[in-house]
Amino acid sequence: MRALIVDHSKVFRAIWQRLVVQAGHEPMIVDNAAAGLAVLSRQPADVVCVSLSLPDSDGIDFTSQVRKLDNGQSVPIILMTSSTDKRVHRRAFEAGITDIHPRTRIEELFERIRHYVSEQDDLLGGRVLYVEDSPTVSRIMIHVMKKMNLEVDHFRSAAEAVEAFDPELHDLVISDILVEGDFSGVTLVSRLRESHPDKTELPILAMSAVENEARRVELFRLGVNDFISKPVIMEEARARIGNLIVNKQLFDQVRQQRQQLYDMAMTDPLTGLYNRNSLTEFTRKLESSASRRDIPLSVILIDIDHFKSINDQHGHLVGDYVLRELGELLSSSCRDEDLAVRFGGEELLLVLPWCPFDNAIDRAEELREHIEALKPAGMAVTGSFGVSALSPGRPVDLEAVINAADRAVYRAKAQGRNRVAAMSPEEALAEMTAEDDVFTIDDDDDAIRA
Image (cartoon, rainbow, N blue to C red; front, side, top):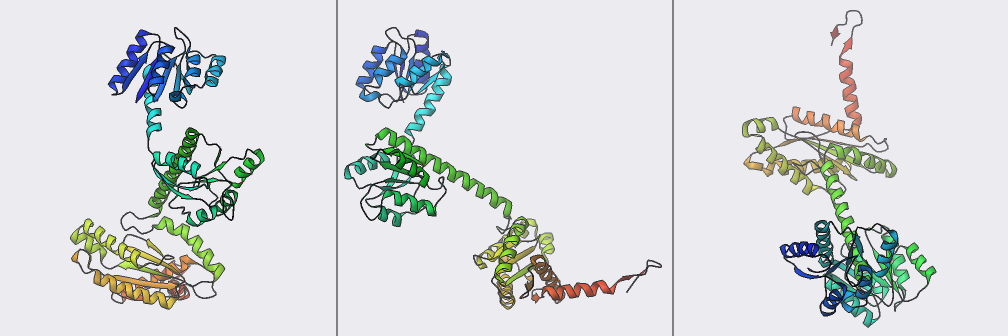
């Protein structure tokens, strides 16, 4: 970092010298405005810090002169003053000052400068879809973007750009409003916004040589994030492109973090399957869809046979390994619309939309065979399977279907385990009713008799 310091105080210049050298940067420190202007006329600086009071001028007049130099048009200039006079501040910003900082807090200012300059020097990374039919403008803009470490897909027509646009690939769309081809940049903006209305997911930067306020307002209503007038000021373009890219990537990070938090809340960390929390949320969607469309819906409940013995004899780490292997097996056997859930400690649940009862029984039998052949940790592991399904024409009650599958699991265990048993919700309800009728209460002596 090349920092030019213009300060009349010998003490403050010494502090600046120490800070700059300790940070490993090149010091350029002078005590008056003329010397500062002479330095900048010979070589560029990354940042300029100037005191308000100078022996031959003041920092504001110095800034006005700097802005006329080739090396001074875009350099950040920080005015060092403890003055709170609004008139001084207004005059400073009108002259081209970038920011104002208390002169007595040099170390704080130095840290701030280092951060500011590093932001200027950072390479962004990303990909831009760029629409421009002017060879001269496009050559300059592409050069600017490549210096920012951006990849550029350049098209002369908006129609070609629409076909090439990829929301997973492009971080920004830049388009001139008047381009050759069947439709204009305005149409490009309109079509992209129809399919991608969220401005944080797809930022669009419009460019135009037409100075028409009504047209500019129309563009913002159509959904552009920002606008640049032609002829383009390259530093302005760099700043606007950088802001849009950075904001988009920050929003992407936030969305990714939210998704990760959601996945953590909805996923069982051991098996990678969904957990009971997610089942409640998905149940509402599945029941609504099944009721509206009258679709078949089945469930398969799996209880790992003798799982407690596996933990007791081989340890919980081996038991966890068995669960992970079975979780991977279930995940690999699922269709996109299926829901695989760790339902309990050693119970695994498959919810199968668009799967009739008979098909679910066949799938359960296939899974039973796969689990028997899996032999996780070199052990013979089997499961007892319960299958149930919505009855055609009946109101949707997924809880009743799962309860029926649970009762079917007990039937499979009673029949010797490592097998599939099926039960409809109506059959399960009849069975539970029969069990309730077995026991009655004698009101006279409160005796329970069979």
